[in-house]
Amino acid sequence: MHRSGIKSGIPFLLVALLFVVVSCNDDDLKNASAISSKKITLTKDRSYGVEMTYSDSAVVKAKAYAPILDKVMPSTGAVYSEMPKGVKIEFYDQYLQITGTITSDYAIYKETERMTIFRKNVVVVNDQITFRTEELIWDENKKMYFSPAGTVTKKADGSVLKGTQFSAPQDFSTYSITQAAGETYVKGDLTQ
Image 1 (cartoon, helix red, strand yellow):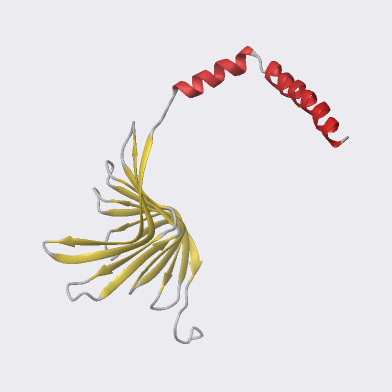
Image 2 (spheres, helix red, strand yellow; image 1 turned 180 degrees about the vertical axis):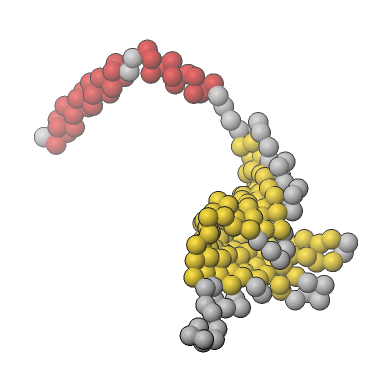
């Protein structure tokens, strides 16, 4: 009796399948062929536990660490490197002392444009400031960092400054921020 239940169920499944196929109209089939004609081939090389060293004239300037590095080579378009699990970059002085760091939960390096985009929980730390944002762009050609918005905390006095259109040279020695608002702390007696 159990077998007859299976045998009677098979025609029902075939009828249901036929109903689904018949319900597709010509427009759906045209869209499917248009999508399938736009084939994009990606070649991806994945590396784990990556450490990259950047040097200039045999002097180490920075080291980058990424748990995963994907080098993506699309059949059309530019090659790029993606760090889907984040990145940490340490900057060094001539004595190999760390002068600052950048960390983020995601990063992408666009080779042709020579641009790195850091996203999600981006934190820049040096001896003067801590800068927090959700997106930071390093333009290698201009040797500048840009961000649509962020928060700067000064280490000297704990002042906090929030604003838009952040920019800084690649050593973060200075910075510019527009539409700024924040808190500052003044030492001394203000009653005099």
